[in-house]
Length: 232
Image: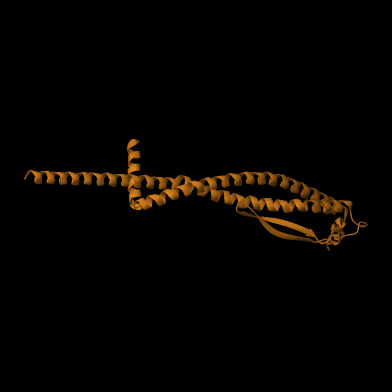
C-alpha cells in the first residue's frame, strides 16, 4: 500500500513537472488561481444548496397541486358520465359545440438562481363567471353544469401544475450541472493546483539551495586562490 502511494506521489510530481513551468511568476499565477477556485467552489456550493432547497419546495407544491388537479378531473369526468347517461349524445354535443368563454394564456419567465423558470398568466375574454356555460339550462342536465364548473375551477391549478413541472425539470438540470462543477473544483482543479504549487515551491527551494552551494564553493575557491597567492 505504501509502495503504491509512493508511486502515485512520484507520478504526480512527474505529471506536474511536465505541465508546469517552475518559475516564481507561475507560482504567483497558480496561487491566485487557487484562491479563485476556492472562492468559486464556496459560491457554487451555496448555489447548489439553495437550488436544492427551492427544488424540494417546488416538488412538495407540485405533489399537492397534482392531487388537486387529479381530484378535479375525476370529479369532472364523473359528472360528464352521469350527464351523458341522462342526455342524448346529440343534445350533449350541441350543448358543448359553441363555447361562450375564451381563455388567453400569456407566457413569461422569472430568474431563480440563474435558472429561467416559465410563468403563465391567463385571462378570460369576459369577467362573467356564468359565461363558462355555453348552453341554456332548460334542456341540459345539472350534472353537465357540475362537470363544466369542475373543469373551470381546476384550470388555475392545471396552469400552476405546468409551471411547477417545468420549473422542477429546469432546476433539476441546473442542480446536476452545478454539482458537476463543484465536484470538478473540489476533486480535480483545486488538488491539481495545490500539487503544482507544491511542486514549484520544492523546485524553487531546490534551485535556491543549489545556488547557495555553488556560491559557497566559489567563495571557497576564491579564498583558496587568495591564500595560495599570499603564501607565494
